[in-house]
Amino acid sequence: MRGNDKNEVSTPLFFMALVWCLIYYTVRGTCFFVSSKNGNLASNKNDMNSAAIISTRLSFVIVSATLIFGLGACKKNSAKSMPGPGEYLNSMVGSNWGYSTTGTSSSDWTVKVEDSTALYLSNTFQMYKTNTAGVISRNYYRYSRGNYSVLVLDAVGATQDIVYLKDSTQTGKKWSKSIKGLGGILKQYNYEVIETGSKTIGSKSFENVVHIRLNIPSLGYTSDAYYAPKVGLVMVDDDYASSGNTYHTEIKSYDLK
Image (cartoon, rainbow, N blue to C red):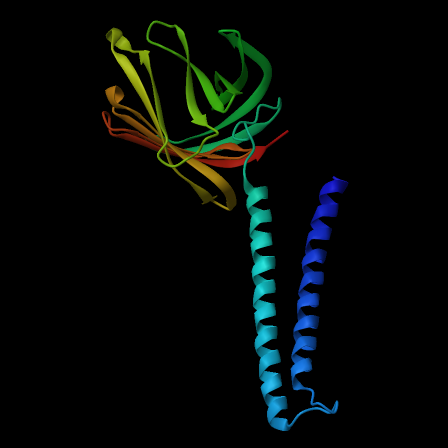
């Protein structure tokens, strides 16, 4: 912590010292040109020319300083704003979220990280308990090596893991997976990164929000989900074209551990 503080202080001091040196030598160098051979100042005309030269050079110094500080600040803020690996999934036991869904039907529901896990292909998935008006469901999530996965059941009850999000959030990035559906028909899960940016939901503002679109053609289903660093899911729009049902879900509260 102290090492970071030291860098934050020393960098601006270095640039301030550099700017003052530039100002000093700019003014001093200009004065050499306005002194006469006998050591007296030159004429008023020369004084005016000198003042113009000083003004021009000082303007150059000020603009240069602005660019230096501006570029330095942008670089620093950019570095701080980049999410780290796994930041879009909070798996700390006790963390909880509150959501509200409107549309074809409405409901309020909560999600809580439970002190329980499940093994799938030797990989550990964390349990997330969902409570919708007293109806409990359990889902299992995992983050590993840049991928965010969830366990789902196929039509014959076999467990499958699906990657629903990646640390690599480049716009246009796509991936997909097929699982067995009813009648042996494969359900193709097609994911795409639509955009990344800031988003305001109600009174809450989030940065580096990733917009992921999921399309399952065989079901006529499309969802647009938005994930924020540290918080996770903050909004989702579900569209069931086959039935005409649509739903809009927003985060209302969260308590992160």
